[in-house]
Structure formats: C-alpha cells, structure tokens
Picture: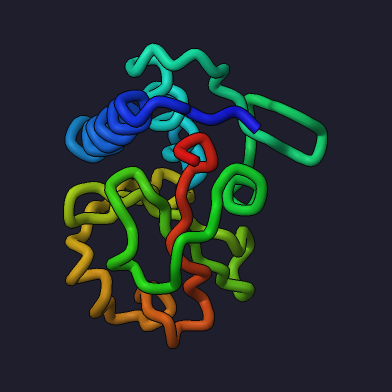
Length: 162
C-alpha cells in the first residue's frame, strides 16, 4: 500500500486537504463534485498534487487502483478505522455513515478545523459545513457522530497517512 512516509508530507497533505475541502464550501463545488464521495476524491487528489506527493492519486478498489471509488470503497479499501468517538479525529480524517433506508446508503464527511464538510448529494445538492459540536446535536439522530448511533460507522483516516 502506498503511504506518505515523511511526517512533513503527511502534515502537508492534511493541510492541503482541509484547504481544498474548505474552498469547495466557500467557492462552490468543482464541476466533478456531485456527492459526498466526489468531494473526498477531489480534495484527496488535489491535496496530493499540492503536496507534490510521490504517489499517484488513485484509489484502491476490488478491481485494483482506479481514479473512481464510491463512499463505501473509500471507507473499506482506502481508510483505516480510528475510533467511534468523533473527538479522536484530526483535520483531513473522515466520518462515515450507513443509512440503509437511502438509495445510496454510505455517506462521508471530511473533518476540518472544528467542522465537518460534506456534500448533500442529489441535484443540485450543496456543500455544508456544520461545527462538530453542532453536528453532535443534529436534529436527526442518524447524523450524529456518536458511539450510540448505529448509523455512524466512525472516524477513519486515509491509509496513505499511515
């Protein structure tokens, strides 16, 4: 598995990932960002480019390295579990959810500095940026990043961060 070996490279990736995700919220999504997984893929690729990382911006899939991966594949093949407590996350880590009553049941959010950024999916969809404390009290319990929420899969870290 490809990894960013040097601590400075990992720090640069995290910084750029957060900046790029934040820019998608502030300036509106890039044309290719149409759902939560697309937002993560976009920020991941652009952060690797900005950090001048020596690994290709590809995702592990069942068919091998590819440019596309859905939210479930990002979680299961490209990230490592950190904890079910959202406070264990760091900027550029991800929150994953599973809502079996939805058409596309996997959903993901990126952690930034005190916020979560996510794309709502659908057309036209939008990018939202709630404070983590606000998300913890979300009016719909299925979106709360809490240990007791069966829909919350936990905090995950990009595997390249080792």
